[in-house]
Length: 264
Image (cartoon, helix red, strand yellow):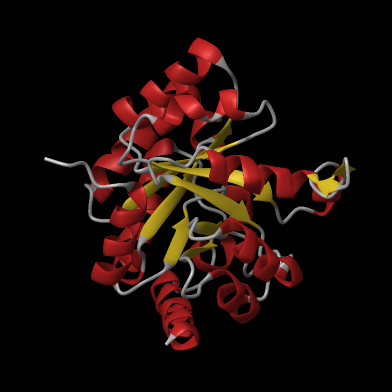
């Protein structure tokens, strides 16, 4: 049986869920109001409650590994419990921004894809193709490569020119060159809407993961129209403005409806 590419899986998941919304499960008690108990059992309850309230409105969840890793081995158990609780009902993106070479990258791939079972991950391209290629062998798994991010200091490297071409444009070219299995995508920050349309032209049909909507000030409509069109799909990631809202169910439904209205 021919293995489906991640691009095919993503497209089918979007159609099935009628959603292009991804909720980031970045559970940080310091941002919650009122303050909650800091016991790990309570964190698990909060996480499960968020999933229950949002699962009908999303195509994927993005699990930022740092929010779990900070609790050490118990945090990894929480991560495993969260993945088990979602139980394959939605796509899972492991947001660790891994990037290394050689056997280290192979071990990252084994960990994130084989052990944890993520459907997609985020990867840093700073060390070049060697930091990406070991992940590509998993043809049905997605690899979202950092391209042009939302943070202000992205300009320090990503917007710098080398031989007349911005670094982030070199990332686009590199990713396209090695996307033989159709399982690569790009992370494009929503705070750069004026550049998303140009990136889409260069990126062809590579799927986009677009964070930066909501708390970071990215424009939903501009980002979605520029990144999601006849050439390629975009997933919109929203974290803080949903998971820390008074009613995550309403917030996720509202975002999903806005997204569907924009692309319809």
